[in-house]
Image (tube, rainbow, N blue to C red):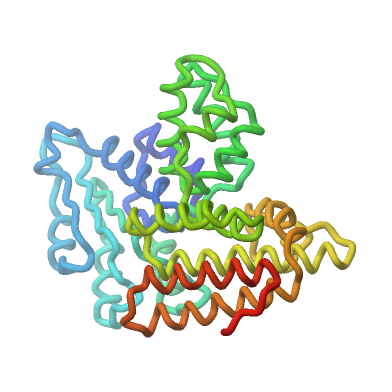
Length: 351
C-alpha cells in the first residue's frame, strides 16, 4: 500500500475501516499520540480492552510476544489491536527483519497492528535501515508521516479551536501566540485552553496572551539576548536567574543564545546589503520561523557587526566550558552574560 496522509487516517477512524498494519512516525508528538489513541479507541471496545488491546514497549518486548498477540483472535469484539511503541528498526539485524516481515505479511483480518514511533526519529534519507523499513511497511500496510504543521495551518487550528470554545481569536493574535509559545501543538492547545477559560466566551486579546501564555525556553532566551543588546542589564540577569531556577539546562540556554546572536548577525548582514532581514530565510533553515529574523533586525540596529562577532566568540567559548568543565555551570553563564554586556557596549573583552 502507498503512504497515506492525515485525511486518510481520519477516514479510517471515522468509518472504522482499518488497515491491518500502520507505521506512524514524524516530528509532531501531539499528532502521533492523538491518532494512535484514536485507532485504539475506535478499534477496540473499552469494555473488552483487557483481552483485545496489547501495548508493547519496543525497547523491552520480544518479537515473539508481538507475534503471539497478533495471531490471537478478538474476544467479543471486531478487532484485536496490537501497539508497539518505539521499536528500533534501525538497530535490528537481518534475522529480526525477516521475523518482522513474517509477522506483518500474514496478519489475521481482525488484527490491527500499529508500530508507533513516538520518541524515535525516523530518517530514511540518512539511514538505509529506516528506508527499508518504510518500504516493508508500505508493502504490507500503511505508513503515515505526521510532521509539525505549517504556520498557516496552526493559525487556522487555533482560530477554529477558540471558536469551538465559544471564544474569538484573530489570526494576528494566533500568530503572536505561536511566536511566544512555539509550534509544539500540545503546548499551543494547552495555552489555548487556558486563554479561553480566562477570556470567558469573549475575544482573546494580545494582552491576554502577553499576560497568561507561558513562553517557550527559546523565546525567553531570545528575550534575554534582546535585553542584553538593548542595554537592559538588570532585566537580563533577572531572566537568567528565572531560567536557572526553573532548572533549564545551562548548555541549552547557551545554545539558544547562540541561535539568537546568529539571527542578529544574519539580519545585520542582510540589512547592510540593502535587503530585508527575513531574506535570510531563503538561504538558511527557518521553516515557519522567518519572524525571528524580523525580530532580530530590531536588535541588530543597536549593536555593531564587529561586536556581534565578538559575542559569538564569547558564546562559543562558553559552550566549550559548559561541555567540558566541572565548574558551576550557572556561574559560567553569569560570566558569559557579563562579557556579552561589555561587548554590546563596545568595550574590550578578553576571550
